[in-house]
Image 1 (cartoon, rainbow, N blue to C red):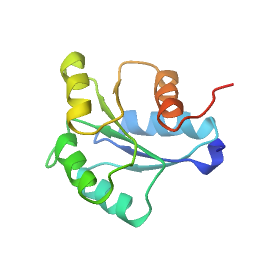
Image 2 (image 1 turned 120 degrees about the vertical axis):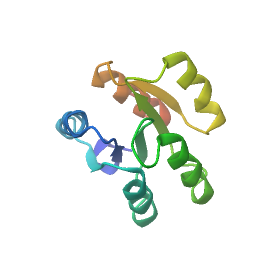
Image 3 (image 1 turned 180 degrees about the vertical axis):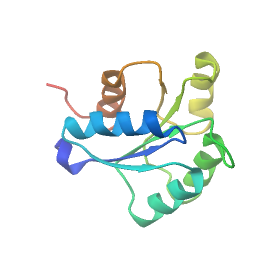
Image 4 (image 1 turned 30 degrees about the vertical axis):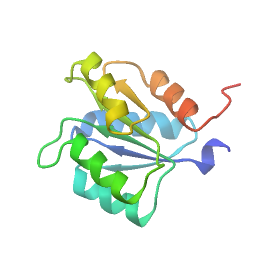
Length: 127
């Protein structure tokens, strides 16, 4: 699978962060879609399932945990990475297996770490 075949869905209410992450992934050759809330994420995933979702945990109206539960009702295998800069990382990592999430990305990390998670989730050789 090459990068151009992978569509990433970024879900985060913090538009500055989301736009920066989207630009970074696009500069690396990925196709990226961005939504800013849980309801839009669910609509997007149902309409055109992405290859992977990066999902913020702390969002207004519908948090990432609720979004994740709803995703799993109609898509059991979609790789999802929880993201947060505020959630206690050790606590968030514990919740990844409970919610069927592939991994946790700390938003204070660099985007290279996010790409490593993407590669691992989709079994892509980084070489």
